[in-house]
Image (cartoon, rainbow, N blue to C red):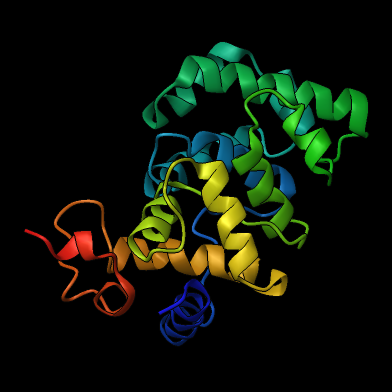
Amino acid sequence: MTKQEKAAFVSRTLQQLYPHPAIPLHHTDAFTLLVAVVLSAQCTDKKVNEVTPFLFAKAGNPRQMAAMDVAEVREIIKPCGLSPAKSKALHGLSEIILAKHGGQVPNSFKDLEALPGVGHKTASVVMSQAFGVPAFPVDTHIHRLAWRWGLSNGKSVEQTESDLKRLFPQESWNLLHLQIIYYGREHCPARGHDPWKCPICKVVGRKELFRK
């Protein structure tokens, strides 16, 4: 199969399995989504969703977050890991959103990526899920699966993003990114993966997956 044929099969299969995938991080607006994505670095979505209700009860908008002590933020988000860096980032980005963007989360990649603790992947999630701008955030699940399915060489997340954007139509990116994440968790995990039982890998998976 060519890469394009593989991509078409992947797209059809994911649409059948996950026609309406929900955003896994609980949020109510662009700011709470941004905060949740920052917290999700090296942390599970489940743990983030356990922590954010307590955080958002105290700081559900940039003004409230900027008014909190960094130490207080750090104590609340400690279960998410990397709390010293994340608490400084959340406090700092809130101050910048107030000072430079009128208290509203900016809706451009340039402005988002200029915020503390916000890289390209985080900006991509916010742009796609909060503002509906086509983007293809690549997390560890997507990076792993794109390689397993022969859609990218797996050398870097930047290369994976570029390859996937080239293979799939732009209007499908925002939905597809969520579908792949759910699929990776349910059918194609990093450990204990059986390619013969994986609906997509058994059809388009790399030969290396079956050599054991």
